[in-house]
Length: 157
Image (cartoon, rainbow, N blue to C red; front, side):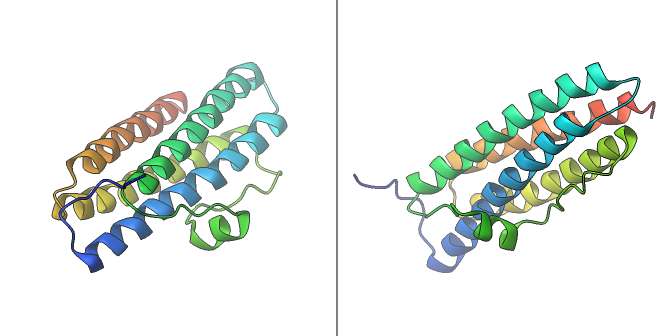
């Protein structure tokens, strides 16, 4: 199987592969963190947050897969071990002691971090004229910005 060739600049291509691998790692760690929150959320908003965290972890799995498959398509190798994911991620793991509001606050921070990192990856893909990767990343950024906004609204901000 032949990989898709983009406007190749070896250094920038390696930079794009690193940025995409960071996304794979971030979504993997977020997937686990969201399961933690889903299982350990307590309080009067249990039913709302329990369901929302499940929705988010399903989205995290799909996002991780989408980015990993794009990385393979353009000739990269997605990080595929927990050790690699923990080394690459900027997402902090859950402690299991967060309150419901602290869980929501943590996810807002995580989604804002993802939006920022996605913007960096968008710019790298743009510099390579890799429109397909750029488009995928723009879509992901719009989704996580919406997720952060929804959580902010949940907290009444």
